[in-house]
Length: 335
Ligand code: PBG
Image 1 (cartoon, rainbow, N blue to C red):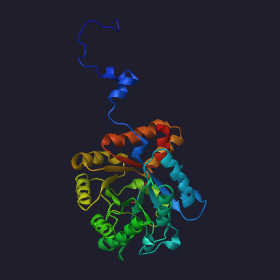
Image 2: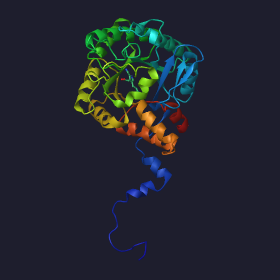
Image 3: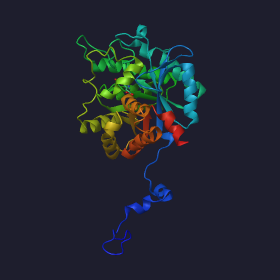
Image 4: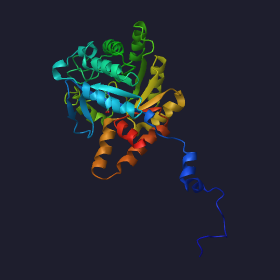
């Protein structure tokens, strides 16, 4: 039997022809990654020349503002358009009403001002939610039973968002999942004259167990009263609800919508993009980063190839951009 058969049926279509050479693979490739797809989440802490490792997120550190600035310079130099700022707040600054969240010279507000002063072209995205600032680790203000109060919390979030915009934030990103907060924040920003401050809404944010390492990073994991955020974050069993949430946030004035977590929810990203056609982002969250790092450090998966494949999947699903702790490394790998 010969391997080159001249008899019998030939396939009409040989899908493999275009796969043979690098040039033809490149010509027909539908999706590509670029450093401009990435948003780098960073953790900022008080002090000078301070860096702290986060054991459940190998390679990610909490940095004081001076060191954060150096990292931000690296990011900008690699072509990363923006970073997302998360504060690590000391216990002495946490309270029931979270009023530290909107202090004019608070940690986030100072970090924003410093970053915008030194690197005006790098986008700065701030997290609007109260969890770093509450003694109980919930994203909002609670009643005696521990229930997060929607409208009272929204008033606090408005104060927080206004203080971020006043400090110079380009984008405020409410990650709290209160109802009506996008509209309330948009109205307040307009009234303050911040008409071009962008809102990136964590619109479809699920009550996920993949956030554990992040809660370690910001120091809220030990104290989450009630142990979960099920009364405001979305049920992982739901898909239509994500479209409802995203449509509401857009109608209330969001410029960009986000799905979170990322990889386990790419079906949601695809539906949101296809049905709403708005700028769509997803967050490859701390738990996704931790899983990858665990496998890389054990030699079970090949680092750069798997990292880039995981990020390309977001583009294929329809993301315009990806929040990822791999942003620096991925941008370097793409150079
Ligand atoms: C809280 C917030 C969380 C994340 C971003 N903002 C955690 C939570 O909702 O408990 C998670 C990000 C990550 O896991 O990387 N407002």
